[in-house]
Image (cartoon, rainbow, N blue to C red; front, side, top):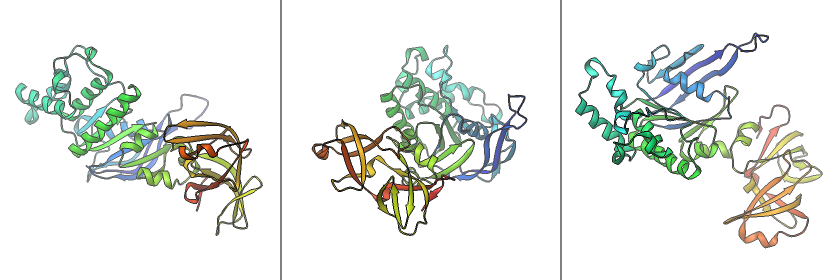
Length: 363
């Protein structure tokens, strides 16, 4: 099911009575989510991603704009008629019901032509349980299950009505690291198996990038960039997107362009022909450094951290915004790191320039 937003906006009254302006949680969304894709809504807390999800589900009404499911305008359609499955962060399972009864519960509210017999409901519930691989736990209560198993029950309950759209609101934040990895792989498998258009809300960029077909990066209620995860990572449109994506995060320096060369401090670190003279922010991905004795960028070595396959060189530079510069090199080069100063050459495709005033990308 394709989802289309047209100038979608949601405002809330400001709780501070001294401020007359409304709080804009979703600001003029206009984009399309393709049919059968898994989309990650990604951004820091308070950016409006959960509000956007609630607008899609019908739990909130927009202040202005339109929402379409396919060609159908669902802007004013009540939530129960939208064909949406919603999975919450806290699972929201009924503690006194078994797994079977929890999964079956949405089917018990069907009326008229859609009403099912108990046998049909049990069959549908078992089918959904098999999809999430908990069909052997149907008689258990939620208190007798792990967090990951409870999350699967919540997903099965959302899938049992065969929704047109599946919405997942921070579904992994209550799980430990190993369970998060396992469950996100399961979500990806289920989405591909069912082909249901799925929207996954998270503040964890690693989660979003690992399972999403496309990501939507948000800040302050606005969409800053949308695209395939690797494309957004490789070509951020502004400094916020560059800083938000990546682990370890991008290194940001204050620099300038003079005569076709990029300077960080007093060192000309890269040739940038065609870029006019200006002050810039220089974003360098940790994997964008090359250890070279004659490298043009000089940093003061603090320590070397061995991470198995890779080595992280932690250093400082007066022009870096952060207290430290983190550079990732191969573990084979660890022995070459000596002394108080390390010198780097830079991989041009891992260096991004941003206007010093607007923070927009300079190409």
